Image (tube, rainbow, N blue to C red; front, top):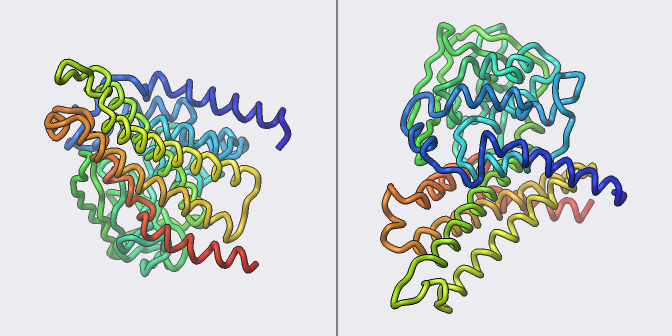
Length: 356
């Protein structure tokens, strides 16, 4: 990439981050987040509509499909800001559906905020298999999908199966949706389909799933970066024995270790996004995404747990904000593959890539 192209990309990313300030402020209070917890649908439809008006779900779609035709660097930047704000709106999952449906009226409905269509692809815990055992042949869908983020707010589902993708309306006969609360106050849906009417659509979820995994790593980066900043501010202002506790060398060392984890995660996410935008393909592409997701998942949990400890006793209370970040990290770290799954895939694919 030329210096001019690099500067243009950096400016594009900066503008994307600036666009998030009004809807997902990094330094805003968390009263909105607390008010939405453990309530259906788990997010604010008005805020989601605004995100759609800003074009966020269409960042990765080509312009002829109503999108912005931007790269993974921009997508990861907005995902990071959404993570830092703990925004519960289903940006990554809706973007995944829009990416797979690009060029269809269904994608347009997602991009305008008219309808929320969420991908229903997973049938077993800790897998990246988007096909499973579900069938969508003959205009009817049969199967069971699990772990659908913020499913309580969905109008329809993009269901993957042996026969390809199909659109299933939430209120169609033969459709049963049950939801369970997640640690961060949102919900996961389980979709049971028994001879449910469906509309086949072309394409598959493979590429969209990989991009969702990297965007989730970026969201985890936002979570850990903000809670780390919050913790450093606390260390500077909390006084004990007549001194700010941040002056104690032992705590300085712990904070430095956490800063390293945040910095390594940022380097990983941003370098992988840049590699994808520069055309990385094949096993090397998948290995790079797994590297970023595994690191972000592990580092996100470590930084959030340590942040609570560094806040002392108050950090363990629900009234304290650091706990909100740990709860979010607990949900994000296993979405689109756990750290263990991605480390295993990285080890396998990295060898294959070297041999190729």
